[in-house]
Image (cartoon, rainbow over all chains, first blue to last red; front, side, top):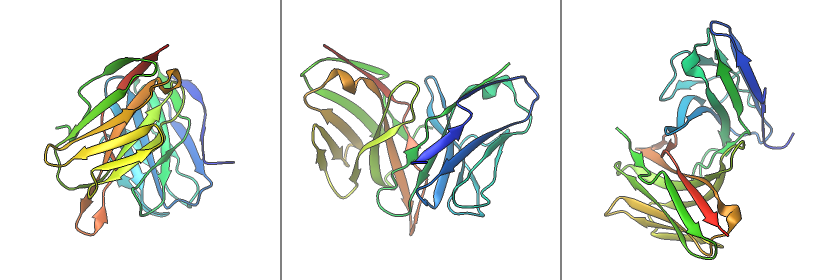
Length: 113
Length: 115
């Protein structure tokens, strides 16, 4: 593994189903993030974690939950998916200090029908 | 209310010419500004950053200018190449007292460089 990996690459999901998007980084970064990207809306922060064991809400947290049991993994769960959660989801990580540059994974394209 | 604004959804430039991507912000508490580049079906990649105490940062063909009085920054790409065609996101990091906030992204500008 080099950098950040996300799984699955894409998924079609029926409304009401539960789904977990996986994210793993091998850079030993303290902070991790989940964003969704929608046309015309840019990147919007869903949840973040500044260090293992802590999480926080971003701009659009409703309908999503996260956990940070260790440094490397930061899964995002949709408890009961709705069509408005159709989007491309990006996981990112960053080290503390510096300019705060974040490194992004390749994304998961999720379609909720 | 948008704190980081990229008012041009798209920009088209001829190969070899200069591309200028603009970004405006409203919050004086940002301490760093960053530019990201995103190709289709890939995650954004970090391009260049600038500290709020500087007015220019250069890295090869990419230069970022910061005008704090106007709350405006711009990314210049010279010369532009077809491979630069991508969506460019401006981002800013808030700094409150002794703690850093999360990056705030603009909505992006799609750059097309024509051969």
